[in-house]
Image 1: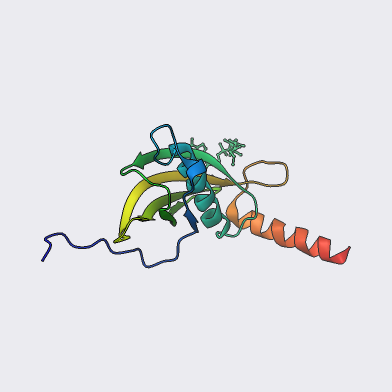
Image 2: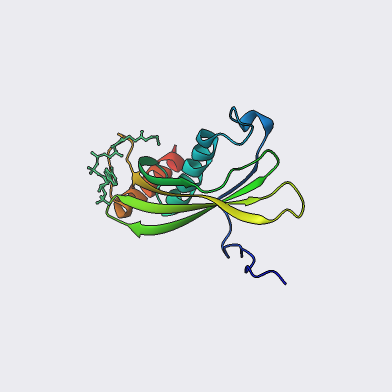
Length: 146
Ligand SMILES: CC(C)(COP(=O)(O)OP(=O)(O)OC[C@H]1O[C@@H](n2cnc3c(N)ncnc32)[C@H](O)[C@@H]1OP(=O)(O)O)[C@@H](O)C(=O)NCCC(=O)NCCS
């Protein structure tokens, strides 16, 4: 029997799942960090939008750690967890888990990141989460009337 406890998948659904393609590689043949960051940012934005505001922007990528390489054919799941909600900003932790292409196709956490998103209004100014929900509802109602 192996000593190590097998990695257990987070219980919630990933914000994004995506298979890595040859176009995503760097000069070493592994997946380019910038490609991963792009998906990390998208996953965080999807989670931030679920807080109720249609418009959110990334204000900070506080930390990123690429713990293990990612390979062509790996299927990546980007799990997003809201760790703090402020007045206009939300901090989100992303955990990226690779389902390896090569048998036995094990799951392995490969990257973690911490990002901060800010809710903004139509003029791209920071807006409290509570207020933008009201504004979004008012905009939707006005559109319906047209
Ligand atoms: C996001 C943006 C609207 C914030 O404007 P701002 O005038 O700095 O707004 P504020 O100073 O009121 O800060 C807004 C919130 O962000 C937080 N914040 C600002 N800079 C931060 C940083 N570097 N790290 C963490 N949080 C930060 C503030 O603490 C505040 O949070 P709170 O209201 O929950 O307390 C503005 O900086 C911006 O437009 N940045 C560009 C965003 C962008 O283009 N991103 C890339 C593409 S999505």
